[in-house]
Amino acid sequence: MSTRSILIAGNWKMNMGPNDTADFFEQLDAESQKQIDGVIAAVCPPFVSLATAFDSRKSASAVKIGAQNVHFEDNGAFTGEISTSMLTEVGCDYVILGHSERREYFGEDDAIINKKVKKALLAGITPIVCVGEVLDERKQNRHFDVVKTQTAGSLEGLSASELEKVVIAYEPVWAIGTGETASPEQAQEMHAFIRDELAKLFGKEAADTVLILYGGSMKPANAGELLQKPDVDGGLIGGASLKPADFAKLVAIAAEQK
Ligand SMILES: O=C[C@H](O)COP(=O)(O)O
Image (tube, rainbow, N blue to C red; front, side, top):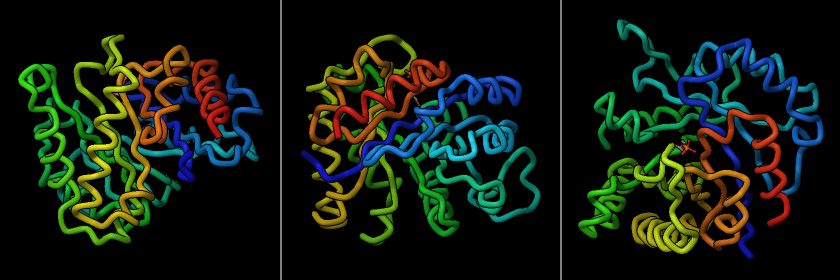
């Protein structure tokens, strides 16, 4: 069994305003908010709900808080954007970067994501870097090439020690919000491939420390079999992370793997 931690990270996407965020933590039982050896729990609310998330965590809560995006400039005339210093000021531990929805709807490419990754690392925020193929790319058997290019491009120029501070999320786009999940074997195959690519680029030691999460319709009913795979180090969870009971179950399932 791997010595890496398991990270259960909720990506709330454009859901959960401040009131819903306060309700979430109110309903999330205290047990699920405790520190569990080897398991990290995190939620990534919309920007406007970050402060409420920090205020609403139970006082001894071990649930980490992250953002869903950040800009790569420090400040200035970038209407609508948020900087890394703003995220550190509110206390963010994580930031999701390069999610397929940002790639598809907001034109983010690997070069932009790479700048954001470097900026997050400089600020001491752990980037959760998303990669993954669309259905056509898998049907054409190009999924390994696509993920290889995204991984190398998003992480270009990092040192091995910087890589160790990065989390990767493999999210096959065809499995996001569709109810269709990659099989545990498909997930393991791609996670092992990503780790091999990381080893080629940054060395085996660094590659072995990187957490590689699976994302795409992960829920309590399928999390156990996915998390049992040796290179699946957690989940980046959309829909199921919005419900406190399901999120708590996912954390409990992760704890059983340890
Ligand atoms: O970031 C999370 C992924 O897009 C997965 O979303 P989902 O769990 O709703 O399929």
